[in-house]
Image 1 (cartoon, rainbow, N blue to C red):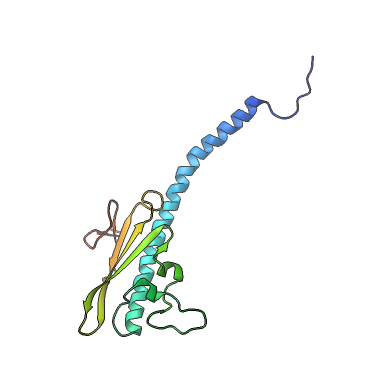
Image 2 (tube, rainbow, N blue to C red):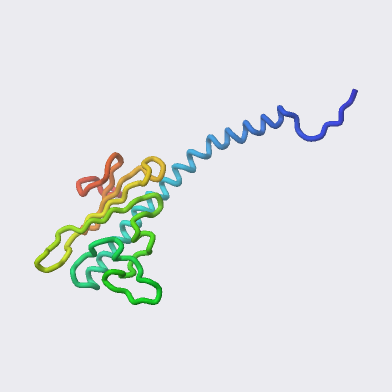
Length: 162
Protein backbone atom coordinates (compact mmCIF):
# COMPACT_ATOMS: atom_id res chain seq x y z
CA UNK A 1 0.00 0.00 0.00
CA UNK A 2 1.45 3.34 -1.04
CA UNK A 3 0.51 6.64 0.58
CA UNK A 4 0.99 9.98 -1.13
CA UNK A 5 3.06 12.09 1.22
CA UNK A 6 2.38 15.80 1.38
CA UNK A 7 4.00 18.15 3.86
CA UNK A 8 6.33 17.22 6.70
CA UNK A 9 6.13 14.49 9.26
CA UNK A 10 5.95 15.31 12.95
CA UNK A 11 9.52 14.11 13.49
CA UNK A 12 10.84 16.40 10.76
CA UNK A 13 9.04 19.38 12.29
CA UNK A 14 10.40 18.57 15.77
CA UNK A 15 13.93 18.37 14.40
CA UNK A 16 13.58 21.79 12.74
CA UNK A 17 12.18 23.31 15.96
CA UNK A 18 15.03 21.79 17.97
CA UNK A 19 17.62 23.29 15.60
CA UNK A 20 15.98 26.72 15.84
CA UNK A 21 15.99 26.52 19.65
CA UNK A 22 19.67 25.59 19.70
CA UNK A 23 20.55 28.54 17.46
CA UNK A 24 18.45 30.88 19.64
CA UNK A 25 20.14 29.58 22.81
CA UNK A 26 23.49 30.55 21.31
CA UNK A 27 22.47 33.87 19.74
CA UNK A 28 20.34 35.50 22.47
CA UNK A 29 23.06 35.79 25.16
CA UNK A 30 25.44 37.27 22.58
CA UNK A 31 22.76 39.76 21.58
CA UNK A 32 22.22 40.76 25.22
CA UNK A 33 25.96 41.30 25.77
CA UNK A 34 26.11 43.40 22.62
CA UNK A 35 23.19 45.53 23.76
CA UNK A 36 24.76 46.08 27.19
CA UNK A 37 28.06 47.08 25.57
CA UNK A 38 26.25 49.54 23.28
CA UNK A 39 24.34 51.05 26.23
CA UNK A 40 27.57 51.45 28.22
CA UNK A 41 29.31 53.15 25.29
CA UNK A 42 26.31 55.45 24.93
CA UNK A 43 26.43 56.30 28.66
CA UNK A 44 30.11 57.25 28.44
CA UNK A 45 29.48 59.40 25.38
CA UNK A 46 26.48 61.03 27.09
CA UNK A 47 28.69 61.95 30.06
CA UNK A 48 31.16 63.55 27.65
CA UNK A 49 28.37 65.45 25.89
CA UNK A 50 26.99 66.77 29.18
CA UNK A 51 30.48 67.77 30.39
CA UNK A 52 31.13 69.65 27.15
CA UNK A 53 27.72 71.29 27.42
CA UNK A 54 28.52 72.38 30.99
CA UNK A 55 31.75 74.06 29.85
CA UNK A 56 29.85 75.85 27.08
CA UNK A 57 27.11 76.82 29.54
CA UNK A 58 29.59 78.22 32.06
CA UNK A 59 31.31 80.36 29.43
CA UNK A 60 28.05 81.55 27.87
CA UNK A 61 26.00 82.42 30.94
CA UNK A 62 27.09 84.08 34.20
CA UNK A 63 26.88 81.94 37.30
CA UNK A 64 29.12 79.01 36.40
CA UNK A 65 27.69 75.58 35.69
CA UNK A 66 23.96 74.88 35.36
CA UNK A 67 21.90 73.93 38.38
CA UNK A 68 20.12 71.04 36.59
CA UNK A 69 20.26 68.93 33.44
CA UNK A 70 16.97 70.40 32.26
CA UNK A 71 18.64 73.82 31.92
CA UNK A 72 20.77 72.36 29.10
CA UNK A 73 17.68 71.31 27.10
CA UNK A 74 16.57 73.06 23.92
CA UNK A 75 14.12 75.95 24.22
CA UNK A 76 10.53 75.58 23.03
CA UNK A 77 10.12 75.77 19.26
CA UNK A 78 10.50 79.30 17.95
CA UNK A 79 12.09 80.72 21.10
CA UNK A 80 15.65 81.86 21.71
CA UNK A 81 18.07 80.03 23.96
CA UNK A 82 18.31 81.26 27.53
CA UNK A 83 20.11 80.24 30.70
CA UNK A 84 17.13 78.00 31.58
CA UNK A 85 16.87 76.45 28.09
CA UNK A 86 20.38 76.63 26.69
CA UNK A 87 19.90 74.15 23.82
CA UNK A 88 23.19 72.36 24.50
CA UNK A 89 21.91 68.75 24.75
CA UNK A 90 18.88 66.99 23.30
CA UNK A 91 15.65 66.81 25.26
CA UNK A 92 16.04 63.07 25.92
CA UNK A 93 19.41 63.45 27.62
CA UNK A 94 18.24 66.57 29.46
CA UNK A 95 15.42 64.40 30.83
CA UNK A 96 17.98 62.23 32.63
CA UNK A 97 17.43 58.90 30.85
CA UNK A 98 19.02 57.54 27.69
CA UNK A 99 19.91 54.11 26.29
CA UNK A 100 19.15 52.16 29.45
CA UNK A 101 20.99 54.54 31.79
CA UNK A 102 19.66 57.10 34.28
CA UNK A 103 21.68 60.29 34.75
CA UNK A 104 21.78 62.09 38.10
CA UNK A 105 23.18 65.64 38.10
CA UNK A 106 24.04 67.52 41.30
CA UNK A 107 25.49 71.06 41.40
CA UNK A 108 28.40 71.43 43.86
CA UNK A 109 30.87 74.04 45.05
CA UNK A 110 28.13 76.65 45.23
CA UNK A 111 29.33 80.15 46.05
CA UNK A 112 26.22 81.82 47.50
CA UNK A 113 27.94 85.20 47.86
CA UNK A 114 28.63 85.40 44.12
CA UNK A 115 25.65 83.27 43.05
CA UNK A 116 27.84 80.84 41.12
CA UNK A 117 27.96 77.07 40.77
CA UNK A 118 31.60 76.10 40.45
CA UNK A 119 31.22 72.34 40.23
CA UNK A 120 28.91 69.41 39.64
CA UNK A 121 28.74 65.65 39.95
CA UNK A 122 27.14 63.48 37.33
CA UNK A 123 26.26 59.81 37.78
CA UNK A 124 25.19 57.37 35.06
CA UNK A 125 23.60 54.26 36.54
CA UNK A 126 22.07 51.35 34.61
CA UNK A 127 18.29 51.37 34.90
CA UNK A 128 18.27 47.59 35.38
CA UNK A 129 21.67 46.26 36.39
CA UNK A 130 22.68 43.29 34.25
CA UNK A 131 20.04 43.97 31.60
CA UNK A 132 20.65 47.54 30.45
CA UNK A 133 24.22 47.84 31.71
CA UNK A 134 26.76 46.34 34.08
CA UNK A 135 28.88 49.39 34.91
CA UNK A 136 28.23 52.55 36.92
CA UNK A 137 29.85 55.81 35.78
CA UNK A 138 30.77 59.12 37.41
CA UNK A 139 32.22 62.43 36.29
CA UNK A 140 32.52 65.95 37.65
CA UNK A 141 34.01 69.31 36.67
CA UNK A 142 37.42 67.59 36.28
CA UNK A 143 35.98 65.81 33.16
CA UNK A 144 37.49 62.47 34.22
CA UNK A 145 34.99 59.63 33.80
CA UNK A 146 35.34 56.85 36.35
CA UNK A 147 33.62 53.46 36.50
CA UNK A 148 32.61 50.89 39.09
CA UNK A 149 31.12 47.47 38.42
CA UNK A 150 29.42 46.85 41.76
CA UNK A 151 28.04 50.18 43.04
CA UNK A 152 27.52 53.78 41.92
CA UNK A 153 30.88 55.15 40.84
CA UNK A 154 32.76 57.95 42.61
CA UNK A 155 35.78 60.13 41.90
CA UNK A 156 38.00 57.60 43.69
CA UNK A 157 37.22 54.75 41.23
CA UNK A 158 39.35 53.86 38.23
CA UNK A 159 39.13 56.10 35.20
CA UNK A 160 37.51 54.67 32.09
CA UNK A 161 40.21 53.40 29.76
CA UNK A 162 42.76 52.68 32.51
